[in-house]
Image (cartoon, rainbow, N blue to C red; front, top):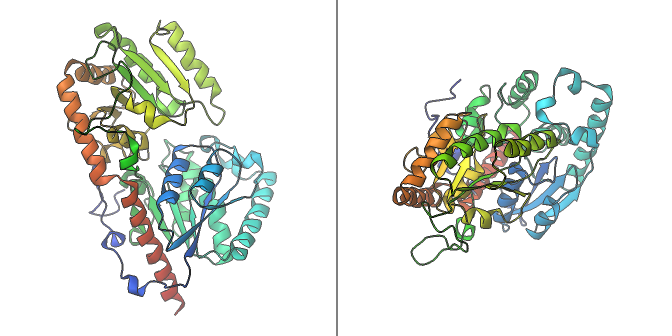
Length: 434
């Protein structure tokens, strides 16, 4: 259901009241920075957590003090500390933290033990918010939205939800999607979605209290560039059309990320370009080892062992992306945003991506990349072969993609838009008390 005339499936910036800026003379003018509490249920480095880390790294510390609560420990914690955030670990029972969103349902939601543990934890989190004198709560994941949302409500602290998941039946169990949409009507003071497509799935949210703000990358530090603006290459894969072009897919190994589609396309590409090599960058998370085994077995059964490399989890993804000739995005369900896509474009890589979710807001089909139908290995293979056959056009596509990221998807721009929303939420709450 469309939310308004400013929402389209191919928009770069969504115009809402928040995009118009605010009069900061009417904003709170504290003698010290406002304390913003960021809440996330996990410290694993998923897409949402990386986006949170990027935001915290670029928030204006003269105006805001970032305080972070994590419900479990992991590699995100030291990175946030390095980013000068105040980080607190409030452990939540692992049966709640590790429950995957696609396995939720009526029975799992209403288990007595789970409900009791969650309520007790929510009360503890609410006390923490009051004791830490938090000015605004910013939740970053679906579990954090619910638990942190109720905690903020109890503590009477303004709440901003950051929704990074499509609230649809093809992405979440129907009962979970319905409950979440209903809660979005009254629990948060404001909702940020990571794309217009994500925001449209929250069809019952009040538009005047919501905004689509794309996640961004630190453009200047993303790749090493030489004087002509071309990413430096340190290996034999010098350009599309070289003797051994390298095609990569980045993301956690998961059924909906489409590694199996990527491999089917790879087999077809090899028939026309037999020297091509492929990388699957990422690892399985959240109990998805069975799918990883399926994908690895598929490599063997398809005789791709010599041309496909599994890198596993890597913390140097930008460096790996800089060595690719083509970046492929293969999700079989609409991606809420497409962080990997903008990272590839920032590195001036031609992109082949599936047409769904927020990706069409990033990729201009035929100009900064090629969009293909979800789940269609034939179309994906055709798009890759098209780029391999015309390296000059592919390089130009990569250049235009890089310019698009520079103009529309920098983390600096994202941070400034989020900061304006903070002031708007606080102003609205202050006026409601008068």
